[in-house]
Length: 462
Image 1 (cartoon, rainbow, N blue to C red):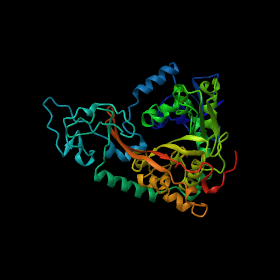
Image 2 (image 1 turned 45 degrees about the vertical axis):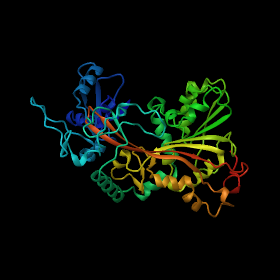
Image 3 (image 1 turned 135 degrees about the vertical axis):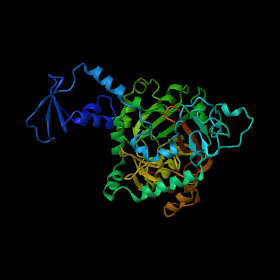
Image 4 (image 1 turned 90 degrees about the vertical axis):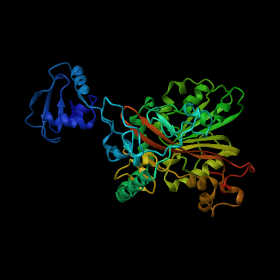
């Protein structure tokens, strides 16, 4: 016997939850649907999930189930915005102009592409440069496709270095105030912060490896990854912190020609590591280049198989934002300890004002710039100056002042690069413009005495 809540019956047939609930109401479905597998087109209904009395047989489908499901889906209108983003309609949508047989009026500052100028991105003065359509190639340049005066906003799927105007900035501030006034309850804060790895386990349990996109852009933004995977790359140990389902590790493994490369993929979600270890690319390794292990970057032990000052490169892509601010100190301490003198951190994460932050509604605010998603996972949004303090040593020095033995033992990385990647993504079909903001950096451990670790003492062995 299979039990489904009424609207879930339709929802599992490929419909979105909103339309599924509407169809359930139209067909007078009660709270619970009980279907006997021996009677695929007959369903028993009960008026309450806890009371199964006076069942009625109701014929729902008169034709083949797949055909009915397909017919219903065809009737389903394609939504421009999800319910969770409806409050941002005026800021991310562009209304279509009515069709006319006469030439349209010239675009003006008051009405550009169907959106008031107040909601338009800031445009640069027009130039005669031919670089506007060229694909970006250099790291930390973040493209050459500038939105200029007279450009068709829908000519490309993305525009680089897009700044937002004062009114959109004001909207972000209003959203932040609203989020702050409607924050997560104290009970839920404790629930989400006590065991964050539990929520990531659920996340990776619900999404298999095919759900995630491989990060093929990494070599372009961090060319050193291309160098160390060449046949002549030499002895290199690379640690990926927050490896997830392996969408960075496996592309690196596939392109690797260096027999001396050691790649450690770590994540504090046991389920994520199970996903990596279950892949054929992992189990069929001949050189055992890739090793995947459970490790908490903010814990007090080092990853399995790694010693202090043994790592050449640490890759941190959208992982630091998953830590609570009070966990940063220990994470910085651990990375410092693991890196060889001269070793580098390759960093990319969310920036303040990113669409992912602005669209959060009530009940998601944990702390300033720190939120919980609907699936229970946490995310922080950084300012450039904040990252300079964290990795450049100012914030870290204050936090570790009592533990440090001398100046050399403080976690003060040299900031080789740190930049803001601002982009406007465009959905031509749905007439949407989405402002994204990411932080990208390269931090290097100074070439100090290799025998010293942070605070003058070694962390516990794994």
